[in-house]
Length: 282
Ligand SMILES: NC(=O)c1ccc[n+]([C@@H]2O[C@H](COP(=O)([O-])OP(=O)(O)OC[C@H]3O[C@@H](n4cnc5c(N)ncnc54)[C@H](OP(=O)(O)O)[C@@H]3O)[C@@H](O)[C@H]2O)c1
Image (cartoon, rainbow, N blue to C red; front, side, top):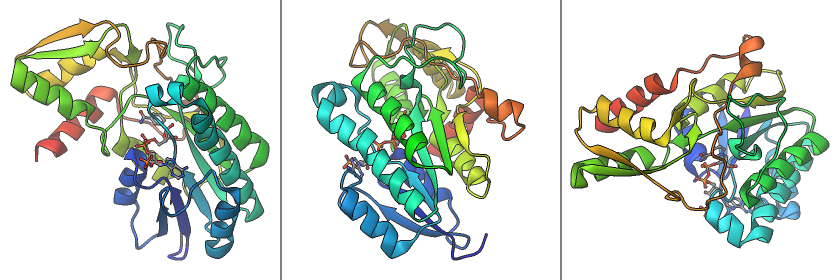
């Protein structure tokens, strides 16, 4: 791709946005990075003005309200940013014939399953956050053509300090407290950013599950972090520790469509975690 290819990252200060900026080579792409102070995605006029001025070829929607408890308490704001914001970007992308990449989540599922969710499984969000992301997906499909909807799960890194918090709890207290019941597919933000880079030039549009391979409980995840660093500490499971209690209990993802289309293979979650910890410890 030529130097002039412009990528607009909306919500560029967030975990995924900032990880993407690190990984995109400025010699290959011209990166337009905005967050709420520059372009509020809920404002359709400003969004359209922005795309008319810059004409990006690719729009990556990393903006959102991602705090589940905050979404429960601020339903209208959650829907305005997560759903209407996505709709505004989808319409703007269509107007200028740009590709759009929408970040979505495992929270679109009910969490009542017991095997990794595939793209064709029935949706059933139970949280306000999950429901707003379901509507966002619908808007992207309705108002844009050249789209990728990427559902990921349990992201760490890129500003999310979950792994670092486990390490400091273990070192300081000799005990790590984690939420019980939850099972997911921990995914490194860097691995997600690498995948996004791999699809930027492609036309394999659609909805994909994009998570590191495998699944674990919060306890197994914490134990793996401690094992990698040879830290001796106890891992204790606590009821209702991770905030809003109605979040999905089972949310592991199967990258089914990536696999059958031979598009991309994510590393397994343990390998990606080891890699991440090696970098953090440097
Ligand atoms: N983190 C995960 O585990 C995870 C998993 C799967 C999918 N996702 C999805 O991936 C996307 C990015 O996630 P993330 O973890 O990087 O989120 P994040 O760290 O919370 O970042 C979101 C960014 O969007 C900004 N923002 C909020 N309202 C905005 C608005 N009206 N206009 C423009 N920007 C606005 C936020 O600014 P402020 O901080 O100032 O509010 C923040 O910088 C989200 O759509 C999320 O649903 C995340």
